[in-house]
Amino acid sequence: MNLNDYEAIWKRQEVPVGACVDIAALRETFETKRRKMAATLFARDLIEASAGVFVSAVLALFWKHQGSAGWPIGLAIACMLWVTGAFIRERIRTHRSRLGPDAPMLAKLEAEIAELEHQRRLLLGVATWYLAPCAASILIVLATVLFNAPAGALADHRLLVGGFFGAYLVLVGFLYRLIWSVNRRAVRKQIEPRLEELERLHKSLLA
Image 1: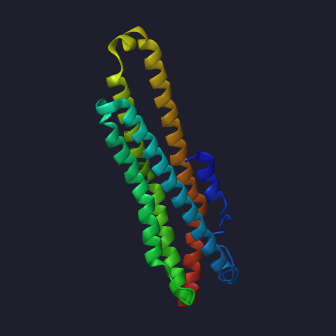
Image 2: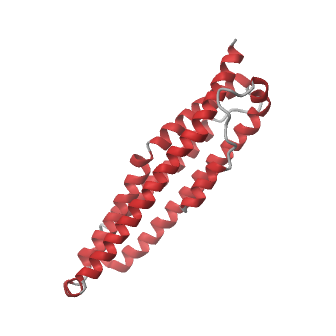
Image 3: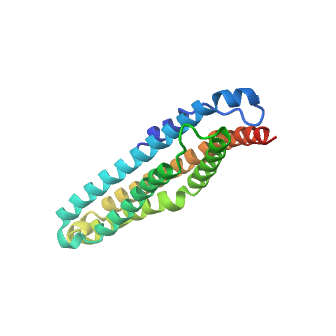
């Protein structure tokens, strides 16, 4: 998925005020913001799952081109399908836990707090369940290409090939660092302030 698209998904959310927001304003805007957050997460999961399927299909075609010697690419596809499955599981989980329109305000509030806490854990752990499988997939494909390349071609263009793959890995590392930073910033600027708002509203309802 394009990094700018990913960051734009979170930027569509209004910046929460945090614990200083007025309770009456929180109650008035709760349902609108809840639906907007749900739409944001739906868009994220749909885009990421679609991208995972597309990349897996491209890798499958590349495997076919490589022939039987390209069998390790199957492991790369498995890594990408793991990531795709994570977003599909998110959709299934969200669907199963969805409350009806007639649910009490308190139930909706507690469900929204639980969802935001889940998203915070998800985004803070992005290096484990998202970046690591994607990095493994890239490394597997690169290693397969190098292993199957003609020995003479590698010997004749050793510096060029090494420079290309080195630059590619640096670029991928830079992009992964940006994705990691975007997720951390989303937690810090969007999720945690919104949690403060909702926890304050929750206390007021219980009181």
